[in-house]
Amino acid sequence: MSKSYFGGSVLLLMTFLIYLFGFTNPETKEGYAGYLMQCEVFGKCRFVRVMHGPTKAGIGYLQKVINVSVTPYTYEETFTTGTDKAGNPFDEATVALDKLKMQTTAQIQLKLKPDDASVKLFVETYGVTDDGLTSDEIAWLSYKNVIQPVLRTYIREEEEKWKGLDLQNHLGEIGQNVLARLKDYTEHMPFIIESVTMGMIAPPAEVLAAINNTQGKRQDLLRKKQDKEIALLVKKQRKEEALGIEEGMRKLKGQLTDEYLTLEMSKVLREMTKAPNHEVFFIPQGMTVTGTMPMSSNRNQ
Image (cartoon, rainbow, N blue to C red; front, side, top):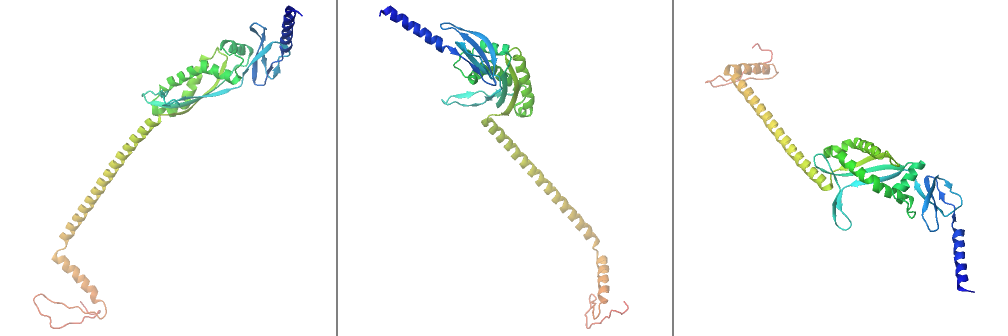
């Protein structure tokens, strides 16, 4: 057997095997759209059509499909300060109107438009023709390259409209403004932005601690001021009470003349004589008493 004959047989066998195993039946599952391609043995692939799952392309030669999800994805964005795993500090906090740095979290929900034109545009325009990627990886890369930078910019711009400590009261308004701007931005893109939800907006931990410390000092000063005002009020009340007592004693002293005291004493003695077996001793001034005179309760006074 000549070498040329042997070589030709091997080449023929390889061609047959390629032909035999080149037949495929690509599948697209429910919730996905498939970008079906027809490839050449030693050439590029060309677009055939878009498939909507659940379906199969049917047996064909050198067919392959890139499946992309048409169901919603949710991604969270965080704006904060800290230190990365390598120990390097980073600062991605937003800045409010009053220049106060704020830690922010936000969630976005979006999905791919399911129509054929949008699926074709998505695969061909946003560089996801690498069939080694999963559908989740394709979705993430397109979001990271196209939507994420704009979303983060819009969030920063909207938060700059409010003072830092007022931002928490405007979460809904900020989210709606960002959503409206993103919809305008993606109007001619193969994306549907379903929602933007603002989560926490607060100063970084060290800033929040400083604010709390300042508020605590203010409360202490206010408490001391109130205590001082109460003490002054009590002092004033006590002084007024003392002046009132002094005035009352002065008036009473002016009324306690000798004649008034004699009159009041006579009234007391008169009542005492009404009691049975009661004796009253009268001692005139300058005289010596040598006896007693009983007074009955029915004696004329």
